[in-house]
Amino acid sequence: MNFAWFSALSRGATVVLTSAALGALMWSCGGSGSGYCDDTGCYSCDGYGCSMVSPPPATPVRDGGGPVSETGSPAKDTGALACSKPSDCGIGKTCNEEQCVACGSGSAGACPCTTDGECAAGQECYAKACVTCGGTGGPCPCAKSSDCSNGDACIAGSCEPGTSICMFSNQCASGDVCDDGQCLGTCSSSAPVVACPTGSTCTKGACVPSPSTACKSSTDCNAADPYCVGGTCTSACTTDSQCSTGDYCDQGACVIDTRPQPNCADDSECLSTEQCVGGYCRYTCTTSNECALHDARIAYCSGGICVSESEATPQCTTQTDCPSGQDCISNQCQ
Picture 1 (cartoon, rainbow, N blue to C red):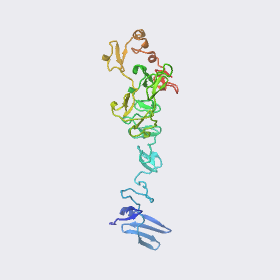
Picture 2 (tube, rainbow, N blue to C red):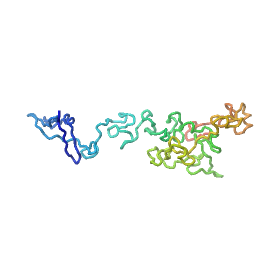
Picture 3 (cartoon, rainbow, N blue to C red):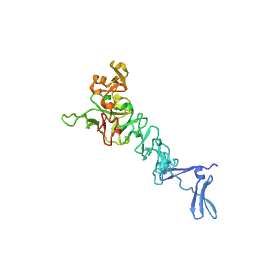
């Protein structure tokens, strides 16, 4: 078996047939005729016998490798797994033009999904598509907390850990309120008017951040601001110092800092009549009368510490506690 390979030019592209390809090559000439190639050459056969003929046209390949079609356009990769639907392909791949390809490559979009298990590591299933998020890939998008993993909650369209979420206004900086898990400044649209800073809108008495660059996912953003967080394209980061004043680095993306503001790490940072509870100095108590003497705003003794009425009997602690269309602001549905 020592059939020499041959080459020919077809439509300006180099064409190559190997002995393996020729040995397997057979064709029909119509009627009872047929043809074949083996290691001695190519033959056309009929009812009277076979005679040697020129080889049939070969599959053209570009000089740089890779097949081309008869029109000179790229042909399908015959080594790729054929498919008819995305589920025919493995995790991280989708079905594009009847071939399994990596999601996001060429004209292929994001991998379709119905559960996180159908997505690659570092991705989650959101709006029926696998999106890269979390870690340093920007916060994962969400419509409800059940869209999030690892116990995170959905806050302003992003999955956030518990340490980034407030439940009560006393966890926020002085004068701010806890609005659906975010510590926000207060405002008023009536006299006397208290305006919100640029980039936020006065909504129900709180300065709610307003999207500056509309986006639905990070694919809508550019290289300068690659992550879509809460409807805004934002820049990437690894430390808080890389973000603008008033922002912080949240899972690799610079976002407005609406986190709670703890004021102690242990009891030594509090008054002798206080304890550091959950990062906050709190008066200890045995009765509500003791609390009222300290401060009428925290006149309730609950769990051995003085709390406000909204903490003692909250109507809500998250937006999910409120009817549709209402927000949880200072533990009241509004």
